[in-house]
Image 1 (cartoon, rainbow, N blue to C red):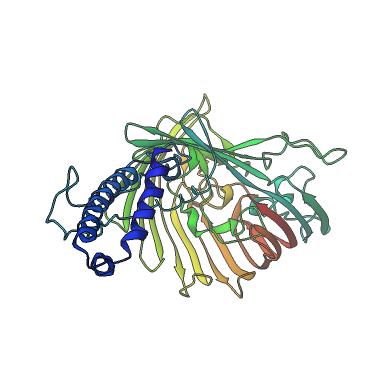
Image 2: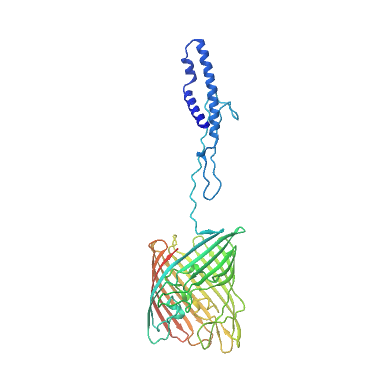
Length: 494
């Protein structure tokens, strides 16, 4: 009430002051007595105005309810308005040069704080200081396949996606089949927790595309078991857990309706590892790792690849990544292994090594068109390349291990026709070279494939794809089989 009264009184006084004092003096009668009375009254009025101005300035300097600012949603500090004022001459606390008698005090309006901006949308949610994110995709896949070397086995993973080792060879008749499933639907859960100024991160990823024999059947409900893909944690420069092998450059893989695509020529393996990554420059990084070993071997009497489970040293992998400002990516990786087979009666070891060069080269500034490639070569690396078409080693009749040489690669061109429409054309190959006389008659020697697709995305994160693929596998005897497959895939990513 006191502030309101002061403001009203000041307004009345200001109105009176709009009439110049000299004019009032001139309007008085010439009589000296009336002149003296008028002068006394004017002096009294001037003093009252000065007092009212001081009260008004004090009232404005006191924060009111209307100037209070609510705290931001995050609980941060409250932004306070700033008040700049000049007091009337003669009032307490006045500083600066005096203004002429009757001059007007200058009071700056309090600046209102800017309206609070909305907090950015949170990606994920927090639990006890840990940010949790969930993503993945729903995918349905269907295919019509034709094999000229006989039909593929009912429980073969080769029915689910292109797997060169499972192309039938030597059948007495052709084979045809239609398959549809949603096994490749995937879920991933990632976490990030601040620890000692850095972030401790973790990832879990799973789908239903697991090894045959553990995934149910198609007869009634088409139920399939959940299978682990990746599970690891990272802190600072270290990664530990199951992740893509350091020997593999995942970014080079092309877009395809298939689970993998150019299977013949790519490194494709996930396994437990301990990895260290060092940033050498803004464009260059080096990763080194020790990874889970497993020697996959065949014999001179059986072409089937089996696991020795007798390895004694981890596999060693290193990769140099070069990411340039124009978006071009290059990768050079190396692999060193000690292969061991101990059957109880035979115990032998052999060295394995491999190199892999891969990359992605943008063809346009918007990066909708690009070229992707990978080239691999080495001895004893069959488990890493082409889904183990060629074994790591062959156990000879003399009890020794022999390592086949593998050369494989792929190339792909991505054609971004529009924002919603795109295609990829790809081709892949693999060639194995065995020591003379050290391989079973049914051993695979080579494979190749070519494919082209068309993807349409009517809205963000929703993809429909059509693809045609031709593949061929050849044995060391010269016998071969072919696959022709038309595919459809629908995928919604979240």
